Length: 480
Image (cartoon, rainbow, N blue to C red; front, side, top):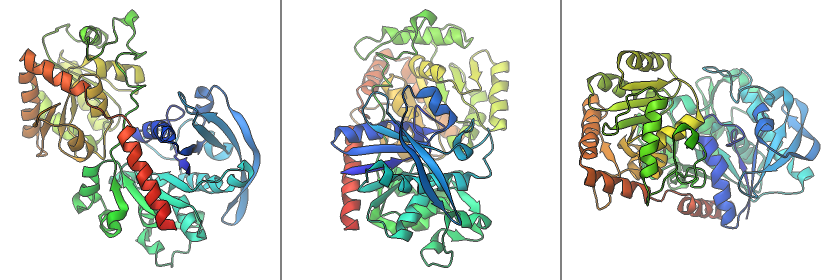
């Protein structure tokens, strides 16, 4: 089976969110199952800073656009730690920019044109490349134009559209005046499903046009049927019915490994550790307290958050609950909405037990996962979430709200509890769950068992990749 996996971002070459992590790891797991899978993304400025070797495989290729012809070149490398090929579409006018989608807090005005070009180029380069897939795996609204093209042209290849986040701000909505970029006839019946009210919704286009659909956890697949979660796509989720699969994301266990993590630098007081020897975790906590300017108190539970500072992440609950919390320390890493940045900065100034880093810092993120005792994810909704999986891998006990992938991965009850869960979206419910975690922390035998349970969870890509392989087979079978 031959698969072209198309994504606007792929770690480590370009990363804005969790999509990049999935795009950088799932293809490797599928390759291990025998799939001839190749990845394609734009050649951003960041690519040349990361890729060690780039080989030009297509020197020039015409790319038909609505009303004119553009062109591109194609470079090739491999995903780190594998022999999975990744192709970079070169068009300096569209992609040679400092950011992936736009400046912080904004978007490039030509994003629809840029990403439509990526999708058209993905089709155009196949002939000069001398390779053709059986299936296109498209990721988020950025690649939905390829699903439109596949349907409009009647391509023989099957299409799978994976929606990593269908929140209202992540659907790719553009003004109707830009419809010409897609080269579609807005009067066609199937086009009306994503073209209405003077707006184009590319997430709806992917959901309407792809042969099969996946979202990134089983619970999220069910929740999306509810208008309160579906954010304007719930009707299509219900309409597509059994075409929509919920497949839990996996985690790259080679990269996220406390026993080999290169960011846990002994020169800074950190240490690697494993389930069999947790002494390094205690060292990481002490080093993190020092690095973040917190009192070095080994017996006070340290709560970590590595998060986008966004309303989706439940930060209104944290804002309401944190001033009343005591008996713990907290460290927060992230950037986002000004109101939350100002709140956390204010808390850090007022309270010696709170430390905040308002930035993106991969090294510090690893150190928080390793050094914290508790990891807080009180999300309003969470399609899958990787933070709680990483925390479990590092023996850091999650406190989460029961939504999406959080509900699928963290369990307070049952034979092997691995965290603390609350359901109601209220500050009181959050305080209750966090209070239970703090109380358990002081019962050392119980806490040791929780940590052991957490570190023996397996959320590697193996099982999820097998589900994706089944999804591919179903999509190809339906295509006939």
